[in-house]
View 1: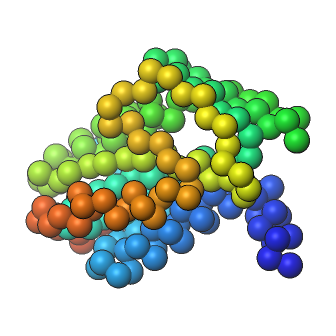
View 2: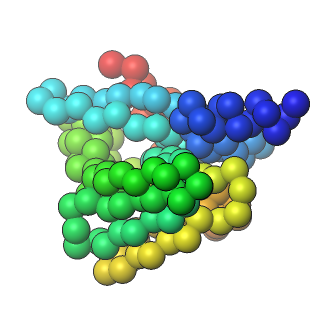
Length: 180
């Protein structure tokens, strides 16, 4: 029953978001952090939508979930990446997730400045979620700081000491930016 449910959710495209959300919530519940999912923010002229946001005294972590059971090809210098799944005969192109994330982070930083929120450390990660074996990933020209993880690596990544450091971030004030 669990296998059929997971496969049904995966086919609908919700498994990746659900998995990442639950992992972030488990991590946050023990550390007095806030998790927001499917939220938007505006800086007055532009809007940005985020899959997942983890807000804590360390700062803010933005996580984008990508779901797929196949192979990913990406180049940090290219505008588009590719995905293919031989089993389902699926092939598609999608925007470079790091370019998309950087554009969204720019809007977020602008909204922080407009609301006089300074010195808020910001991190981001792309999480590839798959129901089975790890997907094949052919990535090149990645920049320092571009974090791409498999779903099995997310919990360990969240235990990094940078997410335990108290940088004096006002969690409530930052969370309120997403409610406007």
